[in-house]
Amino acid sequence: MHVLVTNDDGYFAEGIRTLARVAMEMGHSVIISAPLTEQSATSHQLTLSRALTAHPVFFEGAVAYAIDGSPVDCVRVARYLSDTPIDFCLSGINNGANLGAGIYYSGTDAAAREAAMNYLPAVAVSVGVGATEEMREIAARKAIEMMTYIKEHPMPRMTFCNINVPSLPEKQIKGFKMSTICEAFYTDGYTKRTNPRTLPYFWMDEGGSIEEAKEGSDLYNFQKGYITCTFVGGLMDHNAAYPDIPGVS
Image 1 (spheres, helix red, strand yellow):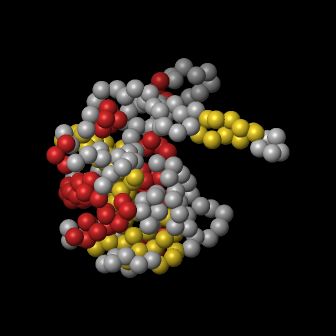
Image 2 (cartoon, rainbow, N blue to C red):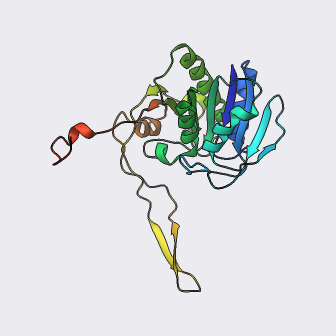
Image 3 (cartoon, rainbow, N blue to C red):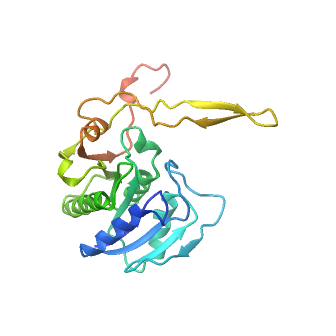
């Protein structure tokens, strides 16, 4: 397959280089379209007010561009950069898990979602903080194995596959688990300070604190040492829960 590889950590990140290299070693051709600068937690941001510049960058065996925009921008312009129709999108390998509410903040997941919105099947793949190259290779192989499966078992419209791999040696990983999306929310606070002009400013506290994970959820299974797999997507409304709004038909 001809595979688009993108991410939100930037074209220079170790994870995207591992993912692209392993994809080529497994027989796929690759085009890289990734952000020029780190775009973590940019979610589904789309650039509207300026032109996007595609900077050619060297990557052995692949065509590669650094885009001065968001991960979503990178996916959207990739089809104009590729001389060959793209068959699949791999987004990652993100440095840090994207689980539960993190799926909505993540630029890695947004890139996969954008691909799915454009009828391009996609897998987003992340690995726990502190991963070694061996651990990133585990994540890359798992994402590419899932890519092959999905090509034979198409996903519903606007759905993508979200995979998270613990930063553990392969022998310590307990298995591969289908998981629900955790509803636990990040509870990080902010430290308030005042600048020399007496205006308040805020730094987010370190630590990534989060509510307790429900059993069976992606966060819960990840914390237990499993690789998690979740199929995410589709626009959903909850209109049926509000049948008695006055004047609404």
